[in-house]
Each structure stands twice: as structure tokens, then as C-alpha cells.
Image (cartoon, rainbow over all chains, first blue to last red; front, side, top):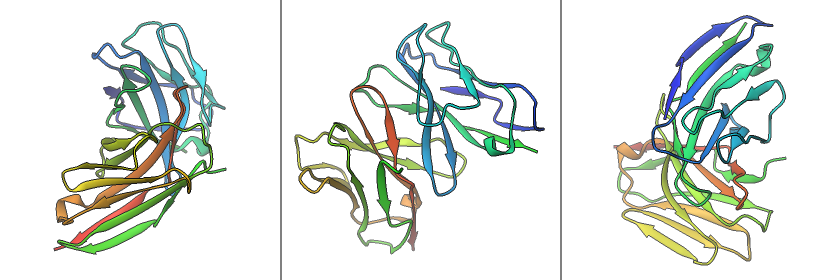
Length: 109
Length: 111
């Protein structure tokens, strides 16, 4: 699972996209955010190409799944509260091991 | 509301000792309980996982104990090594793909 960029600094109100790609032909893909003392929280997930569903903390984010391989995360109007480390993950089916990307550290000033 | 509660927040163990991390949940619909290991600057990686139809699963030095009636599960790391120093997360999920993670335990193994 690859993510880009790995580090990103932006300002409040900016629109941005973090890309995620996997070449394992996995059906399921997810986006999490990791904040100190809060573990990982699910933002959005996709069970297959063309479908997406909200997780625990979807507000302020947008995703799409136009191909099996790609699952970009969009911040529509960045806010300081979205400063976090973001992880993309994928797995073959609902029962299989989940593979995480290396993370994207986002700072919103 | 934290769906999966994890303790302790941090743990310091001597080399060769046993590290024990505990998790508790409320939702009886959870049917998959993985543990992840995360090193600084890296994404979490699956360490070991268990399903509620067994009470224990062992892989090398790592063991999950599962108590369905108490809705608790724990990770035991035997013969802890400095290379085990990392953050450990428990998680739980339902068939519908929603994963819920604990808040993490920072483990330090002292040589």
C-alpha cells in the first residue's frame, strides 16, 4: 500500500488530496486517522470499486473508489483539527489481514 | 465513546520478562480481534488475531487470551526483547468491515 505525500503542511481552508494505491487486487480499502491517545479511527472505507461508506469520523473528508487500486482521501477545506497522521489500508476480503500504508503526516496551520 | 478499551497506556518490562496488554469491549457483534504492532514512523502491522470461537491462540512468543463471557482479550509477549519495543494496538471488527481500535500501549523493553 503506497501513500503520497508522506508529509504535508497546509493552511486553513485549503483543499487537498492524499493518494492511496494498492497492487494486491484487494477489494477492501480504508482510511484512518491516528491521534495521540486516541488510537486509529476509521474515516471512510470501500468494500469494492464504486462503493464507499462512512466510518467513525467522516466529517470534513471525501473519498471515491473509481478503480480497484486507488482510494484517494480529500479534505474539502482543511482545518487545524484535521492535523493528524493518516493511514490507508487494504485487504482482500472482510476476513483477511489488513495491510497499512506508511502514513501521511498532515499539519494544518 | 471508545468501543475498545485498552490498558495500560505504557509498559516497561525487563528483557526476558512477560508483557501483558489488556483490552475490553462491549459490542457482542464483534467477531474478529486482531493485535497490531507499530514502530515509529511506520504503519501498523498485524501481529496476531483471534476469533471468539477459541480461548487462546499462540504464535511464537505472542499469545492472545480471549474471555468471551467477560468480553476481554489480552496479548502476552513471552521472553520480551528490546526489539519488541513498539506501540501495540488491539482492535475489534464486525463482519461489516468496521474496525475499532484501542488507544494503544507503548511498550519499552529494557535490556
